[in-house]
Image (cartoon, rainbow, N blue to C red; front, side, top):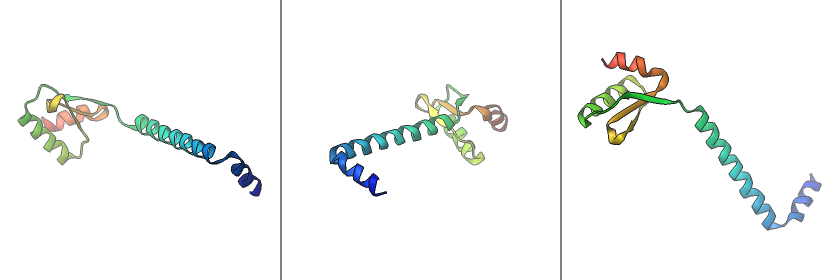
Length: 92
C-alpha cells in the first residue's frame, strides 16, 4: 500500500487533479448511458388535443398510475410504448 501512495505522490497535484476529473467524467457518462438505455420508449397516446382534453386525460393517467410525458405544448400525450393500448382501452 505504501508503494501506491508513494507512486501517487510522484504524480504531483496537477496530474492527480486531472485523473480525478477524467474519472468523474467517465462515471458521469456511464450513469447517463445506463439511465438512457433503461428508460422506456414513449409512444403517442393521443395527439391534437385541446388543453381541456389534455388536462382530463392527464388526471386520469395520474389516477391510474401510468407514467406520461406531454409534447407539442400539451397537445400530445406520450406514454410508455408497452401500455399504449391498455391506456386507450381504460380511457375509452
